[in-house]
Length: 431
Image 1 (tube, rainbow, N blue to C red):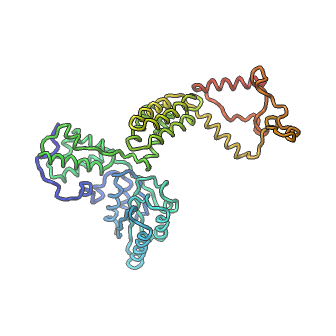
Image 2 (cartoon, rainbow, N blue to C red):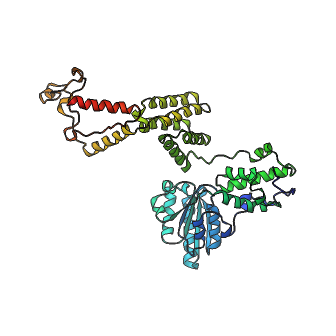
Image 3 (cartoon, helix red, strand yellow):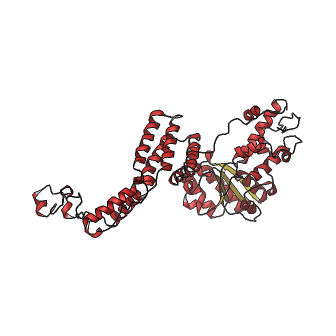
């Protein structure tokens, strides 16, 4: 493997992290996020919510805004900012505008952490134009921010950076490490590929990895690193999955849809991602129990038994071995025939109950525990199914207004085809 760095053993002079040292200082150095770059060139910015994964450029964009706009730039973190602080910033911005015609941009990092009261207190200042708000969030703003605040801001979606963008960022950073080797000369290097792959579109993570490798290289006398040393230099980079964040909902959604779509390969991948990210295995097991009835249903009645058994096994065994039980359940449900007709029937029945809340059963199938009820015709003309030779009668069970309405209509998939055939036979017996 070609050596990555020159023999220089110069240590970092600046104590700042590499990601901070090489933060772009102009729009030309700001890679990715084409639409956001265009906004930087605009004369006037609207209030913005920047939504995107870590390391996609949200904070860098805000720093560039402070350079490209003739405004006072105030930066706050939602974690350590209260309602009182926000009101003070708003009043200061108001005075700057009214007294000196000076505009203010208020940047709030992790804005999704503001509570409703804190969000409400900045609304008047946005409405009256006393400051322009720029909020950065890794969480879906439609979940975390109230509608009043969202309606006054433009949401800009920041995407994970692609490989070319990460490579360009690494190229610029490598030049700041006092090494004479151009990044392009090692573009095919396993280390380059590993950094880009491991970074997963996160520029900050990529730069931290590069800094780790460089420091390790220098500490080992600038000698060529072997494969084992390279692995040690990279160390452990945690997964992005957050069991309490937006990534949680995206991953569990992909997991369920993969099983529903009969793709055991994708389902196992998302299962592994959730477990690696620290997801509660019982949460996953409960979702499997729901899916077994919602998406497999009577196409394979054993699916629910398997899912419940997996839940019990997870409770009994615990991680890490419980992952094996979950994998069995995931693959079984993925490969089972699918039907949602039981679930669809339930939804249809619920709609009918909402529409006809006062409909009562036919008199013939009502209970008659008292003489008065018998006299009123309760239970009269009831046909006992077991008295029939076929076990089926022409008895009407639905309320009169809902006669002939079909709520459960089984598919021809798996075991449900036998149910469908049985119901067709029942209808024939009633004639």
